[in-house]
Image (cartoon, rainbow, N blue to C red):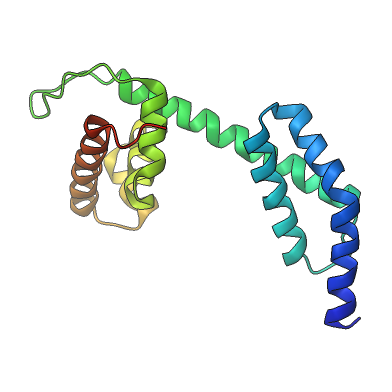
Length: 164
């Protein structure tokens, strides 16, 4: 099959599958933005697929995308809970009651390396040496990264720049 034929086939399935994939996702999450985003991710997977793409295959991919979305969301909520329930220590006297929605927004605005370090440490509860192993850094570099990540988080949170 030529590239033109493959492209035409994908456009044909796109036209038929969009309402079904979007409907499947929207019925389960009841959020237009989330359903649109996950529908886009599903079709990107279809573009990257090597084999035959069918509507059933796309619904299966959409289901996996939705499960991944809920897992990310639960993980973010655990991070919010862990950050908001952290006791204040003498070295870091930031005594503020954090708003969960703002925390989620601020985390989304942080760089990936800061978000990953904070999530691994405070949501997943990994000790610093294990966080270092996951991130491929030394313990000392990871400790420094966590200090910078907390400072970046605090700066965005206090400035209100993470507000939706």
